[in-house]
Length: 245
Image 1 (cartoon, one colour):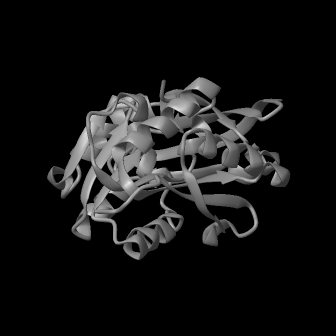
Image 2 (cartoon, rainbow, N blue to C red; image 1 turned 30 degrees about the horizontal axis):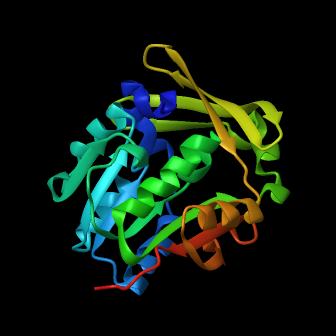
């Protein structure tokens, strides 16, 4: 199930305004161009930012996400008719035949259960044409990114057009092995409503991800550094073996 910040309509509508720095997407656009991908599956597409960037460059894009509220936001954006939007996840996809599958930002880490993770990798594998690629990122657990997920580092007030000022901050609720649970709090100045969104991310070791990919039949091509978070993330480039037509 998607977190409240994606499936609660009021939060979904302000998500883009609170997450304006999407410099992380530029490397994915570059990778799509590098691989010559023209048919792309965006797993965990959320409000459609990346899917629409791809479509604007002429790619044929499928965006899948379990949060209906986020997809409603995506469908209301300019150019949304150029993307095929699917409510669901990678385990419930129809037959596709794509050149590239992606999981940007926190998508891979948000799939916390082992069976759900294996199902996600398997679903992406089945969606890919033989010889084509899956690209996704995950934070390096050794960097312990959650140590800065507190009010001191995350508090801000943003004036959202059509909504007014929204105050937000994050705090960690629990760290249990590879699982980190945290809560975002949102305060709407216009009417004083307070909404919260709890999330859990799984911090996987590089060797664990490599083993999971191999177990689902992928060939690991490369593990890259994330240009926007140098030394803090792994970016996996894997391939479904086979001949490219």
